[in-house]
Amino acid sequence: MLRLIVPADTIPLIELTAATEYFKPLELVALREVFEDYFKEEFSFGHRCYVETEGDQPLGYVYFAPVPMTEGTWCVYWIAVAKDQQSRGLGTRLIAHVEAEARERNGRLLLIETSSLTRYESTREFYRKRGYSVTSHIPDYYADGDGLVVFCKRL
Ligand SMILES: CC(C)(COP(=O)(O)OP(=O)(O)OC[C@H]1O[C@@H](n2cnc3c(N)ncnc32)[C@H](O)[C@@H]1OP(=O)(O)O)[C@@H](O)C(=O)NCCC(=O)NCCS
Image (cartoon, rainbow, N blue to C red; front, top):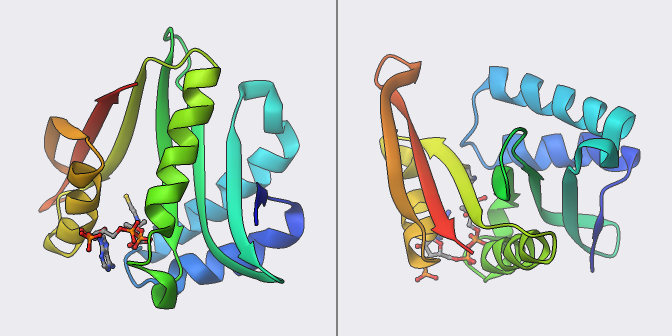
């Protein structure tokens, strides 16, 4: 079932994210802050975070929002699928949901930020296969040798 997250999802989703082994400790700290802010401000800034669940078990989630000071530009800030659930189509369904909801809310462009590290090659391939192309690359953005890659798709 796909639903909006609730505060009780915070710890399970941080654990799911950590268990993918893709994210650095400081990114997991940032994720906790993102969830805390989300539950404080929630819909006032148009942010949305959906989780796919099976029973009580979270399988994957996506966090996205309109970009301030733009007309219809949206960004996916977080997406992760549980390690043992990857490659079964859930990530594709989550991105399709984001695209549909952004379109409904007059979205024109959808951006997705990721890392240039080698271990993210399968993630970048995932975005390319969903019709996204690289619009910018800032070398050494996250750390030396770890650049920012921005994917974009016209909705
Ligand atoms: C990237 C991610 C969200 C994709 O979700 P998913 O449910 O595994 O993706 P889908 O099953 O819909 O699509 C699979 C495709 O994604 C790509 N892919 C990306 N990561 C993959 C992984 N860990 N295992 C298998 N395929 C992966 C492959 O190209 C695959 O292509 P195929 O369908 O032709 O085999 C998920 O793998 C994940 O959480 N990865 C770790 C965290 C991450 O990178 N998050 C994004 C940070 S910017």
